[in-house]
Image 1: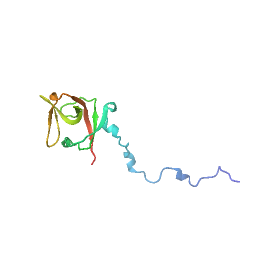
Image 2: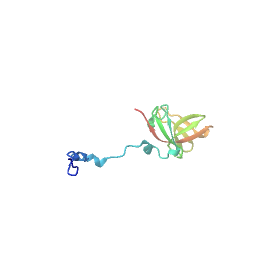
Image 3: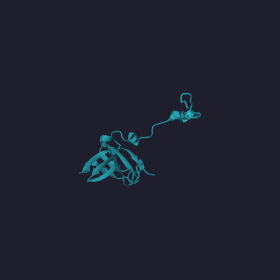
Image 4: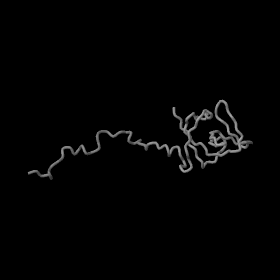
Length: 133
């Protein structure tokens, strides 16, 4: 009684994905931002640490910022580093000159001479910081 070979589906045009003029934005589709690719260059030597205080406010590191620290980098003059001094963690700018100094980056700068510190351990170089606003 019913034959399928001559039957044409009246809704077959709906199975096509074309519906009007294509969006010009299709040419500009990008991958989503991957924070790991953006902020972490060497995952095996990178760690995160929360910063407390206002000693580095002029460098853009606010209280409660998250620091991205790379242990594999050797600090160069004026890098921001994280160090352990007598078991306490500090984030400071390192200055190489006639003396090796650690300085804060705020209105009331404090200076520490690295050569006079007994228990100094460099943990790494700060490569980025994330602040909440």
